[in-house]
Amino acid sequence: MKRLLTVLTAGVPLAAAVVYLPSAAAEPHHTTTTVASSAFTCSAPSVKAPSGTKVESVTAVAEAGGTIQGTGVLGGSVTGVPAYCDVTVTLTHPGDGDHAKVRTWLPASGWNGRFQGLGGSAYLAGDNGVGLGNAVKSGYAAVSTDAGVGDALDTSWALNSNGQVNTALLKNFASRSQHEAAVVGKEVVAGIYGKGPAYSYFTGCSTGGREGYMEAQSHPGDYNGILADAPAVNWDEFEVATLWPQVVMNNEKTYPTTCEFDAFTSAAVKACDPLDGVRDGLIEDPNRCDFDPRELVGAKVECDGKELTITAADATVVRKIWDGPRTPSGKKLWSGVPVGADLSGLAGTTAPDADGNVAGSPFQVPADWVKLWVAKDPSLDISKITYSRLTQLFQQSEAEYDKVIGTDDPDLSGFRKAGGKLLTWHGESDQYIPTQGTVDYRRQVVRAVGGSQKVDDFYRLFLAPGTSHCGLDGIDGSTDGLAALTSWVEHGKAPQTLPATLTNASGQSVTRDLCSFPRISHYDGHGDPAVASSFRCVSPSRH
Image (tube, rainbow, N blue to C red; front, side, top):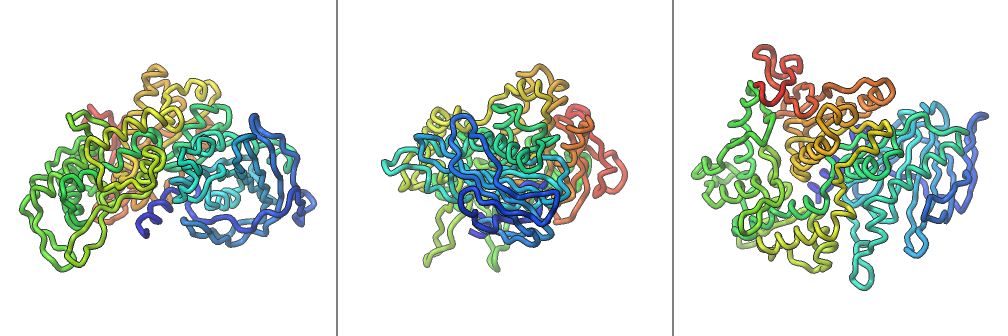
């Protein structure tokens, strides 16, 4: 569970790098509270129901700010939050029986004229409060929605009492609630401040990244700029695909230890590190790494005071995990865990029993997706899934849910025409959402729009070497994607690079200017490899 909480906390967007969650409960319907300011009144505004919804209640609560403690599975806290007005609008879709809360936080003073929508993490549809607190602290009016579902690991809403998929709540989670939050949030801003925002932005990572892409694809007028990192697009496919490491171990009946997995990862990084022109502890392009895990067969590994010998079976497991899921006939289904990423994240195991035996311990997010939404069987035993069964589950998920939550429509012409800007960074050592899915999506957009240069005018992707999911142990808070996005939207300054601080294989911090895809970073032949100025962005074919 500790590993799971760490991963989910990493899902908070960097624009909201400190942590907080909701404080006070909402007061009764249309409660009005006044902030001690002659220029600002925290009162419940009149809210028009978005199309297809009904407004159940509107409340307004004046909050003093300060330090706010996080609740829920993500926890955390944020300090120095100024006084703000918390307006909660509860929506329902007649006939669906749902109750989705839209929370808008508005600073009592110092509003910068901007609006920020916030995405979620895992099965949390919106922000847990972390982003809201930091947005207000930065002068933004911010909005988030719970979509009528639960916390990040709460999937109790997946099936109804008849064991059928709750399609209304899935639709909320997949798409409609974020759009409704944008509509309602802007209306609240206008009601409280007497005018709407000058610019509107969306920020999110993982699930939040997917929601950002959904907004660009389906509601291009909602936001001027979207910062959508490590986006969980192709949800219907990668969620099944990320069970592949468990399926491999169970079918091969081989469960390498974390120490052994780390040995394979370290060896791959050592072998492929020089491909960018210098040994700096980072693999610039994992797809170019051709390290063969069989080279470690027979090697000795120290683990918890014991000496282990890497076997051919261990190497087979790692090779298959890196390669990614395939059908029994060998057809590729999806990308595997990137070379250089932490393998134990998806290939987790239980502690040894009295006889020293271990079993697979699947990551809860994909396991729940397969059990509840695909198989519709909460008792499904993941350990019994064969290679052929995984193929069937993958194809079933794709057939049933691609149009619902796939979020992979490459037609961004509406967003482009609306003048929107989409900015994304994705860690190249992302163990939970294969980076290649994001790369493939951008290539599809290039084909749909008509060329990389046209796409660069409104959509830029940056890949971060050595960086895991949502920046865990990789990019730190010195990378401000939101600042780059606002400069692009408001001043027309498209980011050529994205300055970042990365952590290499030795645990050292190095600075690097992330390159706008498809360019890659290459050592210039001299200078300190720990400093960004020693690298330049080049075409993949020019080094």
